[in-house]
Length: 454
Image (cartoon, rainbow, N blue to C red; front, side, top):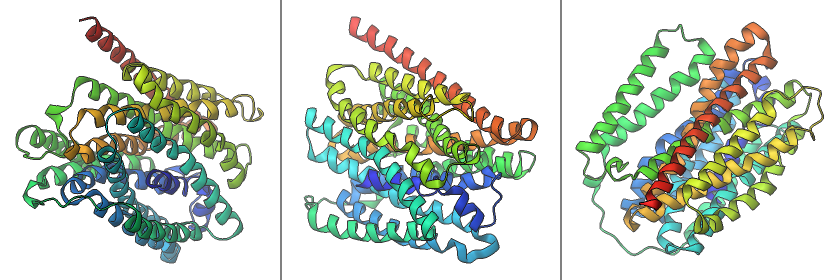
């Protein structure tokens, strides 16, 4: 349910985007501003997962899991009241969506760590991680359809208030059902405060610059300044993790070459996936005239094929090397985006759009579980929170980064060639990211074959 509701929260602002924007006084052509409603959520999910996973290792994953549900509930209520800010409602929604994302950032790594500490290495653990991955597309579809229904027939804040009620119920259920872990000694001095501050701050500033640039333009002085500060903080973070941290948030020196290549593939694929998804909704609503509900319905096949591909990932992980699975996943991302890049506006949904929706889950649901299994099996029990954090951080942060870069492409292409070509330009960027992912995956396969031969 943690992964299901996390992706459901992401989908809440995608399907009814134009309804929310209109209510808050944002022009339908101002995609840069409205993309913040989704990017802010993914930003904080990705940025805060790392320290949240470490806190779970220190204080208990069940305890942090319940804290995550409570945070998610409270902030969801606040998000729903963004309309009360009137002329500043759009800004308040973006800010509160950022705070809301901290809840899933606490939930996801601790949920995955509970799986990693409960199930031994083997088929059963692989299948559970695959089921965890399957909840992603189904959760997004559920969140998109549910929020579209409430937004179109009631009022969009109700989507967030109903989510808050659900989170409270899950907090109570988690307290009652999840068994209490054995007591452990906690020592706050083992928490990497310097790494947390530099890492989170660097991720936030770097991401803010990329997502704000499409809104105000790169000529604003604070955009390159913020971007540079983010880069400097991230360099400082890597230096601290490699040389001074006693309990590093990211065990940089301990990451194998296979883990780095797998995470690189995931970063390229999922950044393109965020672009594919966000602009697919804009395309079918702005240029094909679909309602929010109809747009969400068109994406619904992802839930069906996604479950099938995700559950097969656990079996594939036992039969094939991670490198081969990653290559197939990257090809899935590439082909799914290629189907949409130049799709005609008036072409029926069933010719290319439908097949793009069917193929894309190959990338999503083979890359996430296989990467998670690779890192989880390579780390000790006491570091399961960190291993879970790495994959989830890369997935969620890459979505937000991809939207930021695509927003810049969409803005400047639209100014010269119109909104339709702006969306196509964003999809071409996604194709380029997919091509990078395929290239990394091919190199990953070559390295794996050399190791097997030696």
